[in-house]
Length: 145
Image 1: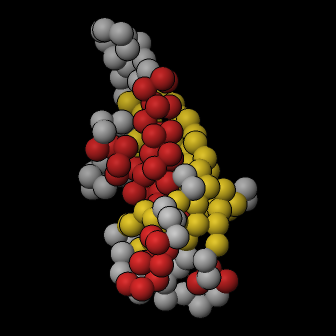
Image 2: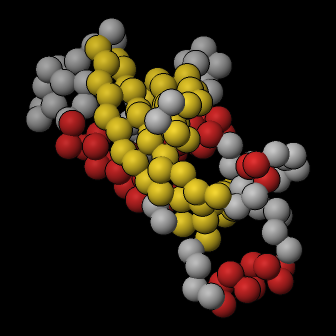
Image 3: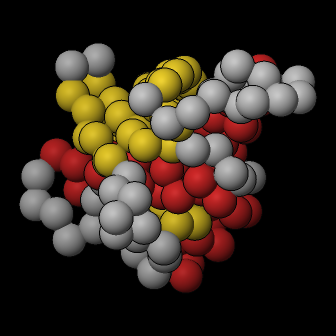
């Protein structure tokens, strides 16, 4: 098995709906996303001969995803009142709507799914909320998820 990894960071705000603790309040993180890819065999021909994937391609895809989340407010669909959304938009805030609770676990899974959809052979994503705490999502090829 051949593996590569790269990482990217982004700054964003979020809160956890239906949570009773500090994280129910709006707060921000310097998220660190570490992405691992793997393949049994290296490419046999072409520009990527003897590579899992060109590092330039790999880094570009991971950083593009991080850029989507950078300096935005990650919001779970349906978690804010319409008047709150209107006020935030009126103030010019950047909102990124997500169809899940914005936990590190869900963000790690989402990053894996998004990158795999772009034909990046992701096997694991680590999503750090803080320098010492991360959630890990491992792709299971047997389950296809």
